[in-house]
Image (cartoon, rainbow, N blue to C red; front, side, top):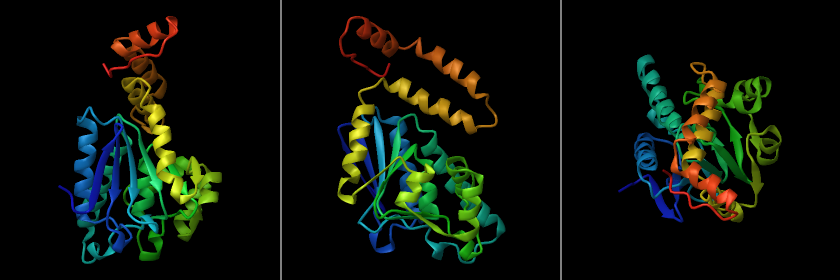
Length: 258
């Protein structure tokens, strides 16, 4: 089905692997198209409860965009490319199921932007993050200027953007860009352990937590109003009845995502 990514579903966790290790998993048109299709499946397939995105091999998560596809592009074509990347990454950010980036190695340029579009990040000890687009006469185009600033603050973000420097995993953890740093051989296991716990929670409530948190950065919404609305919506779900009943009956809830 796919040529540039692979997918596998185990224990309701979908593992999406960017699979171009000879190109350090660089993002090209095929990767974008296949990633878009895979994320559509995340939205529509009830068998999927959560997602891990990672890169093939031990060197790179995604080392950037495939720069060969940039040559010869005009102004409007560059804008179209950025719009496409932002559309797909926003779809990841707004997914109603948690999407975790398991960053194994380099996450540079579009790779850093992909990682930041995920709901949180876990890094291997050899992970490196950066937005080196200024070295190419460019800026990040897939949401990097916005999400980096949201995640680590304006001063640190601008310094990284205008120097093109990389952050090592320990600094990324200190800055709050990643939640955990683990040995590479433990990376996927760490991501799975968190998502296996999440998968025991009420799926509709998990999705609404993500939606409410995203509203903090959506200037078209009042986050507190959004929270009130989403809180109220929970009361119309079977899972809320089951969760509160199970609590009072001192038993484990059986959530159905309804």
